[in-house]
Image (cartoon, rainbow, N blue to C red; front, side):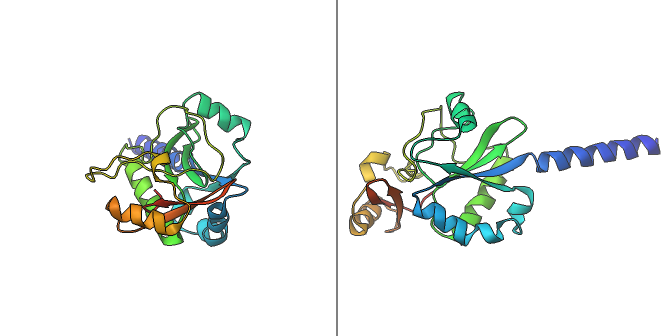
Length: 201
């Protein structure tokens, strides 16, 4: 009986260890995206030593314009990854099943990123899919998008194209009108910087 319990304990340990390392953080990083570069400068050097980094190794996936590596384009086409609207996009990837199980879109600051990542991991552990986007939907040019999902309980509906501004002042006004407290974020596009209301998701 003791041998059976020992074997069972060892099998459970191996299974849990494999599950822990079956996840990766795929960082879709645009070559022209300033926020992608900032993430690599501000977060990447300490990421592997952080609590999430110990169980969720980061892998940079270079995005050039609107072109993804072939394996990722195939995952998009097959619906294993939702639509990509811009970079950086952080996919929490289940390498065992070869699919996205959560995501964070955009980057504003290091502390916010770690807070979002911790929350996303917690949601996944509870069986949820944070940041889920439906369907393959393709993708836009890197650096061109952001998540403009409706804020829960805000009563405001918006689409990505409804809230893109050329100046920070315009985005701040829209943010205040939408009840987002004046917070704004930016994205780099081939045509320059765009400003959007709210903190990136």
